[in-house]
Length: 358
Ligand code: NAD
Ligand code: MN
Image (cartoon, rainbow, N blue to C red; front, side, top):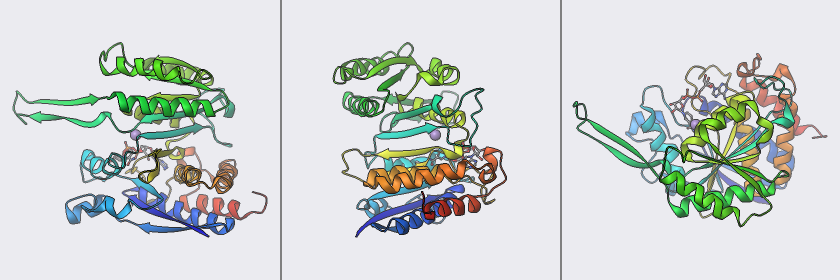
């Protein structure tokens, strides 16, 4: 029997609460399936680790997880540590060296969940956002000089390469081609950012030639926020830079009902390194420790992990179990307007996994 080796990195805040729930659900799923097993190795990296050791993960941290089949990640972000230290010290310290350049973020309005958009329901909002995950504004290029003086200067340079843009465009066109509508929107800002974003547009045009059956269009990022809100039906697959997609996907999650539901896969499509799966939300300081975090974003991320591992039947079973649970408003956490807690939702999903007809 195949045993998948999963590195669980809960991180900080509600990350620990939702990853505990996710591991429990995955164990129940493997038991129900019977054809594969999962072994979880837990890593206590994050803000508490930082306070003890002065770094977010050990120096050989990546070495410890590079041979795992996948990584299940919670959140990096601690109330007492600056956000750029936690983000760069853990999440980006894994994504970038493991070349997880394709960040995939599906958004749908799940059964039982109400979109804040008037008159918009299930079929009208079904998107996948592809976020370039290795360069752009997150390349880490920049610096600060004369700190604290009136002449202080600081830069964050958005770095784009032909190789980096070409591979994410190919990935996005291929993904659009695999979906029924074969429809791709390329998000840009080439009116104001006249170097890298112009190259981005040109590469989109040339990669499009390889995918004649994909219909595609181009949209400035500011206008894109309006289109997502007013004409969600006109969108299907979306590709955007690291920063643009980061922002647009929080909007997408909110339009689909809650940030607590939205999943992500950080993929290394060539499988040279493990890929990483995580809810898109952060540590949620305002609700941490209360036991009310919505675990659905983590469960849906686990679905993406199972698809990546090559367990489509288990992935489908888990997605059905999630949808069965969201369909019942008594099982909604407070972010969805309900009164359920993490425990109750987790138990309900495990119950649905075990139920014969799912
Ligand atoms: P956040 O996602 O933590 O929270 C935003 C809002 O959404 C909060 O009101 C929170 O309560 C709510 N929310 C988020 N997830 C929820 C869930 N599962 N259930 C119910 N409600 C949920 O974003 P933030 O407040 O901007 O960031 C807090 C910290 O998390 C910061 O340190 C930030 O850097 C970090 N962060 C980390 C990641 C990551 O590791 N991938 C992503 C985003 C933010
Ligand atoms: Mn984000």
